[in-house]
Length: 100
Image (cartoon, rainbow, N blue to C red):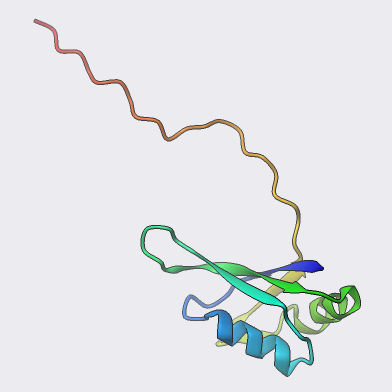
């Protein structure tokens, strides 16, 4: 199973648009995930496609990288593994002490 990164997606694109885009190129897709903002649900402009056949995934990268979807040239390449992020951040600051 190969996981492909699909970037520079139009914000209006959904999973069905991407699946149809790959199907039109003759590539069968096992799953499509469009990454969305966790608070607004707005698409973030990138997603991932999983393809069961490694040769088909390579053909998809070759055929679809730079091709236009809804007015934008897509970036399609093999996804890199996630790397752990540094820091935990996001914690609340301690309350400010009032001086009397």
